[in-house]
Image (cartoon, rainbow, N blue to C red; front, side, top):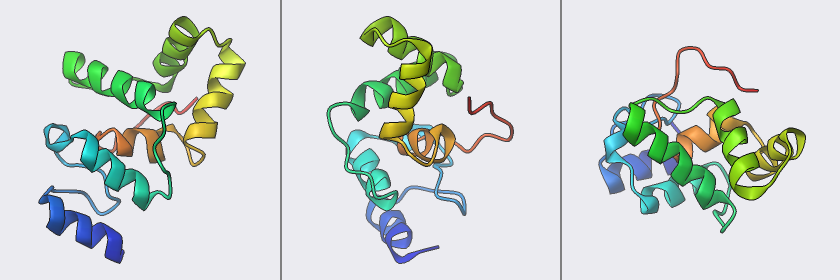
Length: 117
C-alpha cells in the first residue's frame, strides 16, 4: 500500500481492500471521494460529481454499482450526449477507466466481474 493510501486509512478509518476499494460503501462521503480521487491524481470538478452521485444513487437503491452502460445512458439522457460522446466524456473524467477510478472514487467495492464498456 502506498503512503497516501495508508494515510487515508488512518485519517478516515475506512476499511479498504489491497487495491484501495472500500470494503463497505456506507463508509463513503464526498470528502472521502476527494481523498480517493487525489490518490488517483484526479482533482474532482463540477463534471465529475453528477457521475459520482449517479453511481451512489444507483447503489443506494439497488445495493449494486451500475454497469458502465447505465452511466452512459444517464449521461445521454441527462446531458444530451450521444453514446459515443458519453463514453468519451466518461473516460475524459476518469482516464484509467470506469471501474478503476469512477467506481473506486464513488466508494464501490471492487467487482468480481464487470463490463467496462
